[in-house]
Length: 272
Picture 1 (cartoon, rainbow, N blue to C red):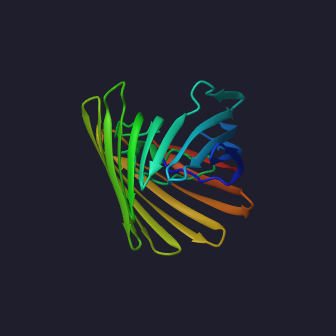
Picture 2 (picture 1 turned 60 degrees about the vertical axis):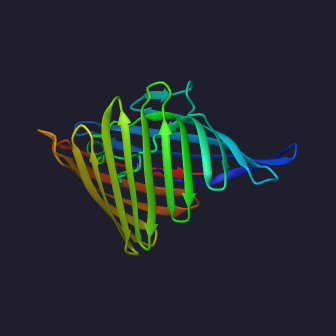
């Protein structure tokens, strides 16, 4: 569930009284993935287009779309019919967004390992039923943020609160999905070169896990553990390393046990 921020190229377009910033950002990766029996070649491309402007009275407004494509084991996939469209308006820390929006309660995020993620976090995070909503309201005040989201088709909804105090960060979320309760807790603590995180989720079962990341210069090494209390479920764990080569280019790889199967990958990551 954790995201990567991309470097970007910005265009400025003057329209009426407002100057609009149109930003193109992107990421890509390529490498090898071992699924326990077979090694395949993978790549993934993600481009985002964001437009924003601010009125003379300080109201910010904008829109964004996302374009994704992947090629795995000689099979290409893409989603030209969605593009994750979002439109927002914001003022004084309050933001209203309409579109293909992630749930407000989706605040827990174990780290993952590998250049394209090995799914060590999936079982622990998968015990809660979270999806996309089409309306959200968010409010930020200093170190604290509050969010609420709603889906007009299903009437599912979610709320969250997050914040930080010194080196400790936290996030709490609750979602009602198809009448079922989902609770989410995420904690992280920054020790300088070492960051420790933990999650607890309660939905169809209880999911929990932790991650530890150590950074030395351009090298980051991460260990992740995740499990649930579901009958027959096996703990997932893995270790990975990523090295920043500069200018948006990096190499990364990981080795993990996922549902009792040994998986691994190694590849190149790019951001631009």
